Length: 444
Ligand code: PLZ
Image (cartoon, rainbow, N blue to C red; front, side, top):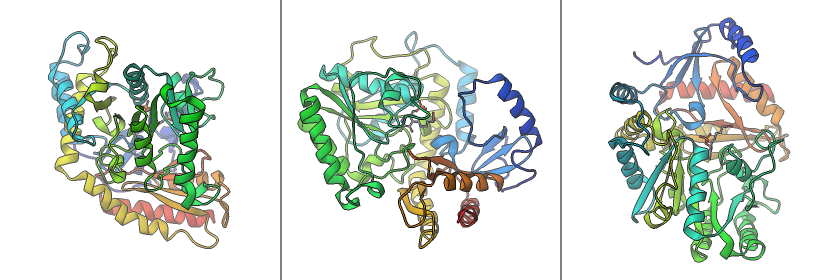
């Protein structure tokens, strides 16, 4: 089957009648805790377009939350999935083995930052990868504590929810939380009380105080950080911050874990976002874009750390499913062969100047930030830093009505984030930004 036509088509109101009818059944059948950004039902998707059951061709600026970097139906990924599914869909790697698992591990050992000896374990979801990185760090160090940042997002399981920095909707009513999780301020330049120029230094002082005084470094197993905070609002740390965190960790025998689940595989204009800061993490967690839409996650890191868990200590029924591994091998081949890391930088060069032009006197766009094809607008009351989640919602709703799929994020719900597939045709991207511009203008 070929890709859907790479064109924006607004055929009906969005959502249209077919989606609206399905929505009624959805609401009757599904648990109320499952949210949806855009209440349309998808018929097919690929390239830079999502086609709904009413025939609307929606420009995709979400990639299923940074997953379908190669598109939602890349022919190379589909071919490999089909070929693998015809041979076998599952054995459980803990029962009998297959080559794809080993090949994905080898690819991750090669691609992740640093030229030290590395090993990999595969899992199914990003939350599971983070959870296992902590298990590995605890086993390797014999220490209990985990240090995380404000505005962090690490998942929805008990441990990773405890590591996540935002209460509603992720944690509210779900306690008690996992113990031994400590939070330090994220150096969020736009919101740093004494000004962005002090963010790195003061955030590091707070980290040192927490690690050395409150917890005691000899009790800290891991410091876990997203190199660019995703759900928290596409917060780019100030230059030098991550490097200093890594050095503090190394000095005290603490495992530095980079959660690259949202930032990995070219998204930020480098294969991994840590590379922008010259940081080589001890462990890297990946998921999302790794397998072109199939559920697959990984922990990759220093061989001696990865080997500190006794045989049988890591696993999962579906961990490293063979169809997901086949998809990952296709995805990684496409990312490397088609220069998609470079493409993310081209996307930034194309989009960022237009987003920056939306700032200025009277504008609700307080800041434009991000890297590569991970770009965001933070919306505020004009002339202040007071968050304006209502304006962000209005802009997203305008885009949705016009057939452009944008996502809102941020601790204060006031950030519009752009995560287009890296393969999106440039003319479609330009058109989506034009719609976004008119949405911002209408919100003023
Ligand atoms: N770490 C950095 O971004 C997932 C969450 C969507 P899973 N982000 C999207 C939602 O609201 O559930 C994420 C992430 C970072 C970990 C995760 C968790 O990955 O595959 O959703 O478990």
